[in-house]
Length: 267
Image (cartoon, rainbow, N blue to C red; front, side, top):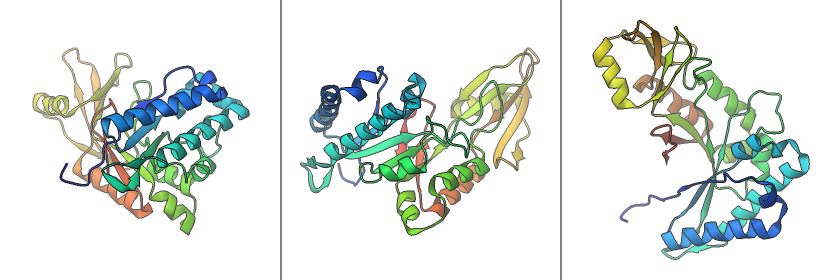
């Protein structure tokens, strides 16, 4: 109420997308619902998550459906920008779009690539880039290797031309403020942990913190009561500073993920 903070709730499109993307009435209905909710609750806009869901449904493999998906985002952004905020006549509703990291330099249909970034630049005010969850129980390791983050930014933005610099300002590099506790022996397993769990493990096992140079992350090893070996990766001041510097070198912003439920603060 007293500052310049903006509130943009996360909206996830989980329904089967075929009718939404193919039928204009369905698209218009969805857009009108989102705008009506923003007006009623006095939101400043939304953070939209849909690309990963559409990829999971397989619709992005169809070139026509993929184009319809991009057109829906454009239509939503244009509609939101046409709504001027009552409390600030100089601002309109904002659209931040969630994008996942491309899987490789050889982009697939389901990847959100540099051409998509540029094509939506006028409709989207920011991109929430999911530069985290690099590892999982089946491949235990660091949460977000620094070299991996750099390669993603390089792939999306290319050379540091004027156009790419303006796009970089719209990207929020995701930094996880949670960690992972993975099982290394006795079967695969484990998953995300919060600060309370992390501190409990430190107090219980008094492990030796180690620096993993390739990923630029701290980790430690311990064995539980069943003598099963674990590895824990968790953000440290050093790892966070290095990621802030990486984002800053591109002129990008920051998305702080407080936990794996995707609560985020944008900077």
